[in-house]
Length: 119
Image 1 (tube, helix red, strand yellow):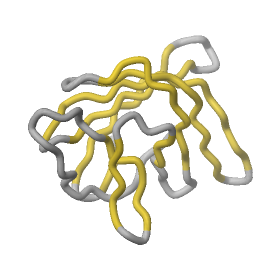
Image 2 (tube, rainbow, N blue to C red; image 1 turned 90 degrees about the horizontal axis):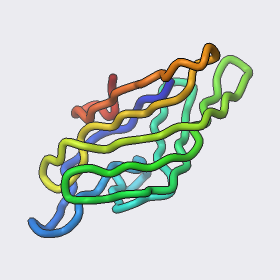
Image 3 (cartoon, helix red, strand yellow; image 1 turned 60 degrees about the vertical axis):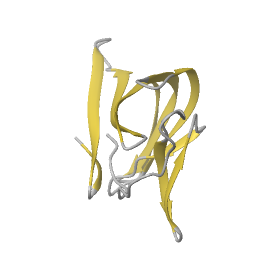
């Protein structure tokens, strides 16, 4: 479904809330607290638009829509997300849950590596 971007350590004060990687642009990695958009692009590209319901020092949860384009089509899915595993002031795990066509939950777990968000 979604993946991509590159990881660079995010600066954060010891007592502040953790950040999450939102995108990579010409200036480098962009980290934010409670961002409205996450760019998690694989070859086809993808964006998650979110509203966060909780953001603490150990986890964050939210919901919104995931949009992925590729092979001539665009797919928009409702998604719930959970960010976890804080390292050096940033979340390094992300779980995205959508509903499959048969009604079953489809969970994708991503983690940050030197190459970006990967399954």
